[in-house]
Length: 233
Image 1 (cartoon, helix red, strand yellow):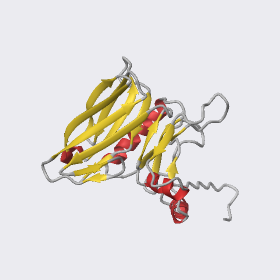
Image 2 (image 1 turned 180 degrees about the horizontal axis):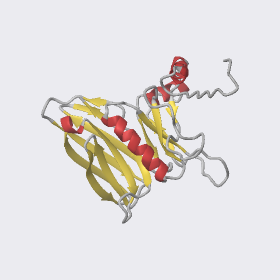
Image 3 (image 1 turned 60 degrees about the horizontal axis):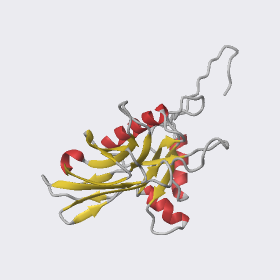
Image 4 (image 1 turned 90 degrees about the vertical axis):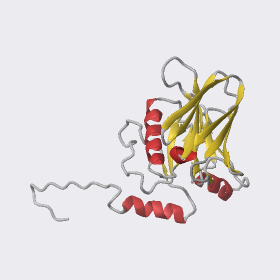
């Protein structure tokens, strides 16, 4: 570009200029996933600036749970309410010995231990996030003879309800919260392990997911585990 001595050029790259969509498409063509990593970290060069139209997954939990993760979680919930089936992932993002690898971690329900099988399970949202390997979490929704887990769709007749079952272990003295498109709809306190069950109106819920948090007096304790949603249709 030829410039005069007093010219001012302002080049900005965003989701509409074709650069990010082009590379996102290349990642998918190569069999990968496009993940928005720690989108809410308030550091130069770390904040996400490309929108979420071409994103497959959102890192809602990065290292020790803090306010940045709470904001990413709210972005994800908004996208889910819009009908976007974006997958939640988490990772320890360890940069030193003081940061424990595997806290948090993403647990994937896969058909095998090969890389393609794990990526396929993750792409579908057949996964949940946990603070450590000691925490185990199961979430299923059933109705009219069908059963679905995270990343799957349960088809329910119009006006019918769905039964949601949660099984939690390795997370003593925590608060379990059931979340749908309407927000936080159920809550319970559990001990070392628990099996919980609720009935929901599937049409108004649209999807259901689970959060397990530390039981504290403040409104929101630190995250212990969370699932990707089960969808209703």
